[in-house]
Figure: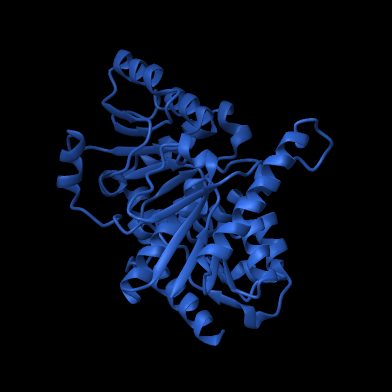
Length: 359
């Protein structure tokens, strides 16, 4: 059995792909799995280890006229050629896509070759790539049932699996997690802007915490802001551990009482697994899909939403001031209900294997 997995360049695409690969290996020990990633992932700090891996050239092409589209189109054509040779050489039984424009060439070539195909949509609002591919692929796995109508396909194509999270994300005792950071037992806030950090969240969170009182911070800020943030926390006398990227996120989630974060689909899935109260600041672009993700948690009472445009208006300070109340945090945590680990990886792997059998 051979499965080709193709992903975009963000952690929100790559981590579910890696989790899926892990589940496939558990179910089919002899399966050959190849992961295909955009070349630009090499420059990022996203850990991709222990999998057979190849890179292809890709480029972001603007829908409006832009001279940059000319070299971008050549890069994209190069990626199509690379995808062609990879598919013809590897001869997969199934091609699984995890979204983004980077996945389109490989998925469309698989369709042309009549190879079985499956895509996974992480967000409530589907991305452009998956909306296009939905018409051609054999099966579509969804993180949220609310996504189905937007794809405008026969319901028989759809399967609800949830969004796979990393296999190493396990629950750890709070005391052990705090020890990992050298922290005391007091209110702990996890701040993260996604796999690459967010300079806006970095800036405005630091301004906001001067009001809410005594707390300690785990701040994952991206590479460019680490030095300045570390200096700012030190000068302000705030206990903080600042990381450009943190691989051991299980310790951060287990130690935290509150998260301040973006609303990517992977982040939503991880917050749900750890039943972690959150203040979510959705990324305002990419069709505002993060806002729709965040509304899922806001509706059940597990999160508060601060719009990106309101970061400089004092709204974040006000929300933080509310969340230093332990009763508020306890109620937000309880609103998650049961926190049994969702079997998203296993469900997605089952859907993939069933698709191969049906082929």
